[in-house]
Length: 115
Image (cartoon, rainbow, N blue to C red; front, side, top):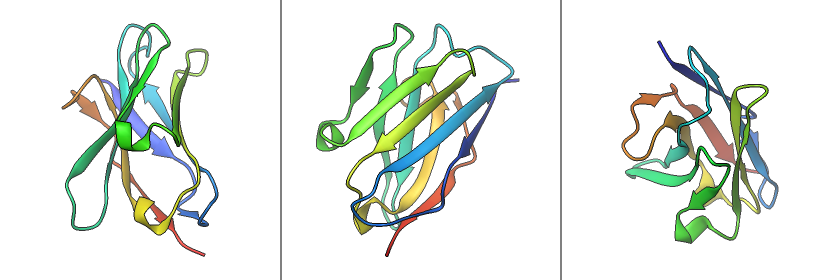
């Protein structure tokens, strides 16, 4: 059974960088796409981007200037970095396997952007 677990700080100050890690167990991250999704209060799910099996990444256009998704195959993890955050980046962040809608998801982590 593949399991995903998000980790990282729950509070980030405005203008700083949000960094989250997704640890995958029960299967290798090689040969799959791995994505980050978020849901802001009162809004729907937003697919932020994916890291592909060949090491490339693809991001939603609205975040492209601020986002980076990378993989660490030695640790079976993949990570999200979102730069220059604002309170509008406050959301529950999820990691998932595959392209939308994904077949395995983490439980999600609340991240609040506030001073």
